[in-house]
Image: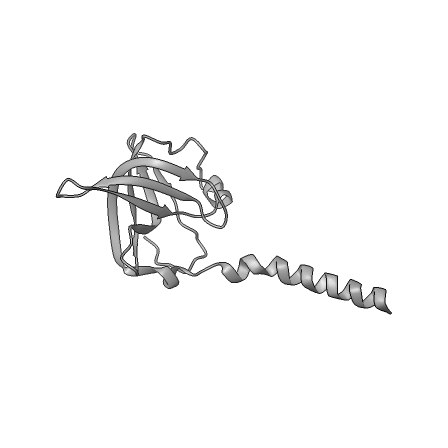
Length: 135
């Protein structure tokens, strides 16, 4: 009886732990404003190919000459790969233009939808299932 109870408890804890990443995931509307499109051009400072979303960071020079580092949330690595991305599609030092939507909290964060490289390539950068607006 004790072995069965311990086994059921272990399986239950395992299943609960497996669902934790799903509970932590957020929808587009939780963080971004679909009525505030943004276009930025900047120099890539970092690229993180991580789940559940990959991130690209760029330095953007403002009209007053100050430089701000912006975080561009993109789709997960597998979605980007299936959309034609490779790890060297965007590298540190590259100049890119991003089209996306601003964060609701006013931070320098963008839900990226499209990234254009200096050679003119346009890459889809969003998550098709995040319920955000489509460009």
